[in-house]
Image (tube, rainbow, N blue to C red; front, top):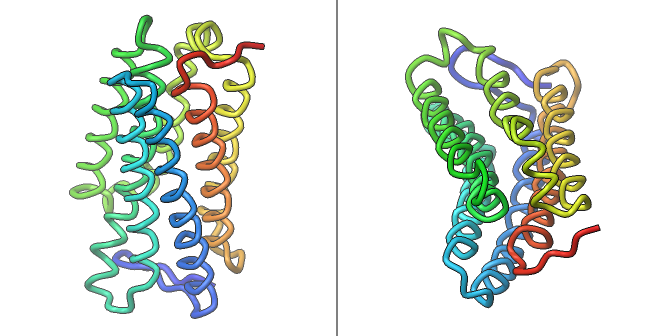
Length: 223
């Protein structure tokens, strides 16, 4: 079971093995998925689709890479550093997921406004994580949820611009991430962090499929 203090978190050997293995395998899977996504985007010849896919893919891979490294380290000094990078990666993953949706699907509506807001808040969250996290430890999960669900402010635009099936996949990913945060927070449950990792991987898959099927194609099918 995890042992927490102000500087670092210690998990049992079996927990850490599960933690790093789960995200290492997920990261490898998404690395292959990124290659396919970039191929699809490149074939469209459309710059926003290519850039959006690249940003999403880079943030996705960076998140899983830093998480895997963090859970593989034993030195407290390096664990503290990569724990911060791991959490910073969450902000980047959220903003990176928004990027193709705002630059492609919502570009003719409120896409640019949401794009700027999300990346601005993500940057604020990163600065908070670097400088103030120990003063307000509960704020980070709140920011994750608020940033992740910011899309609801333009739900009408999303429903107009994206096929209903795509919206369902997108919302499903958000719900899975949010439910996973419950396990992230309750450290009394054995392997709670590994369970959180599984929720994250499934949520990431939902959003990857949303972008692959309903954002990047030039003519996504509407229901």
